[in-house]
Length: 74
Image (tube, rainbow, N blue to C red; front, side):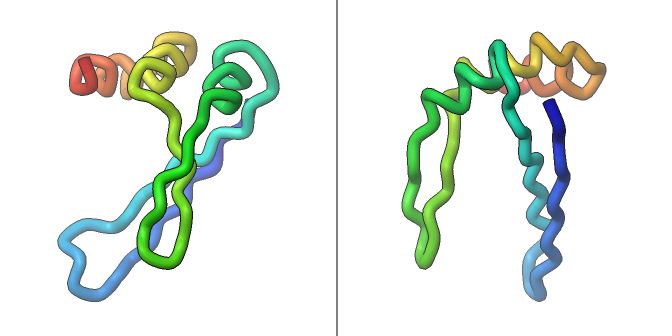
């Protein structure tokens, strides 16, 4: 699996928009990709996964930041 971080700075925003893009190649990541759903936002569509799938992916990665995220998301 690969991860790419994209950050966008926009005038007037208090914080930068940060996206973590995960490229699934099997296991929990592929399952999450298969269950994705689209959410229309102005001129684009955002593809998201459920909170449950996100937590499962973070459990699998098991980095310190993922454990903090799981605490916050649960």
